[in-house]
Amino acid sequence: MADLQAIVDEIHDKLTPRLGEGKVADYIPQLAHIDPRKFGMAVIDVDGQVFKAGDADVPFSIQSISKVFTLTLALGKHGETTWNRVGREPSGSAFNSIVQLEHEEGKPRNPFINAGAIAVSDLVLAGHTPREAIGEIVRFVRYLADDETIAIDPDVAKSEQATGYRNFALANFMRSFGKLTHPVEHVLGVYFHHCALAMTCTQLARSGLFLAASGRNPLTGHTVVSRQRARRINALMLTCGHYDGSGDFAYRVGLPGKSGVGGGILAVAPGKASVAVWSPGLNHNGNSLLGSLALEMLAMRTGWSVFGQ
Image 1 (cartoon, helix red, strand yellow):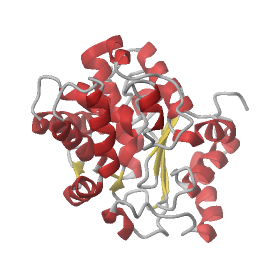
Image 2 (tube, rainbow, N blue to C red):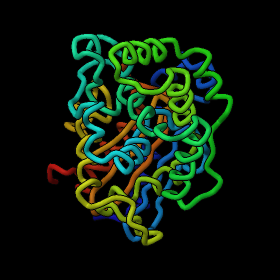
Image 3 (spheres, rainbow, N blue to C red):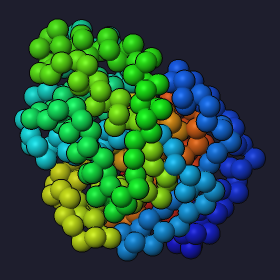
Image 4 (cartoon, rainbow, N blue to C red):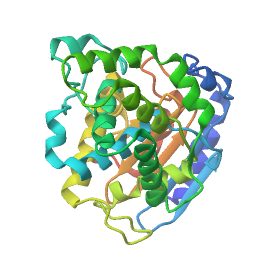
């Protein structure tokens, strides 16, 4: 395999002429102001070596990528009973769809669509005030990244709270089926705030490294989750991490991944590396257009696809 830094530089150079492609997520007003020509990429291997290019150290709103971390927390608190509240199947629907919820009596298909992440936020909230739960999530991500500077962007959180009508509808619908145990306002307060976490590609890649290293953070030596749990979280990222574009991402890239409408994607090459890309322009599925292309190019050049070279 060629030098990883050379591969990352090559990907950056090849995509530079296409900067600005895709549509920024303007339905969250604060995200509408992001420069669509931004592009960053960071690869951190399981030995801790860092390879990056472009805007890899510019913070951005990770949005739904945070759902990987809240799911990990919920599983730590509730174990396998987590799956009584949320399923493990791909949705085949848009990330904020309400259609399946009615048919399936308020139980979301998986923890990575909005309804599923709201259910997970309810689980993380157990025994806490919203402020305490939000603090726990921030501390956990700082622990994973070994970086105390990571914080929530209050303007993004406020923007989501002011315009998240669809998420209020999803949460109230789930509450009507008895699938949420806390007040909707409290659950959504936690949800909106963890989606408003701001991180750089480098920080994000570092946070996902435990999933590339069988549940252990190789940079700190800490065991975050068991080997089996890391494998299962990766499986869910592969099958459900890109909403109704998950199958296409698996076909083209072949790596577990989780996208966010802020334009970021966290991808995991088990046993090899953790990768974060950021480009704000989204495709029609709500996933980063250039970020997806960058990961496809990386998988092809490294042979890291979980399906073989």
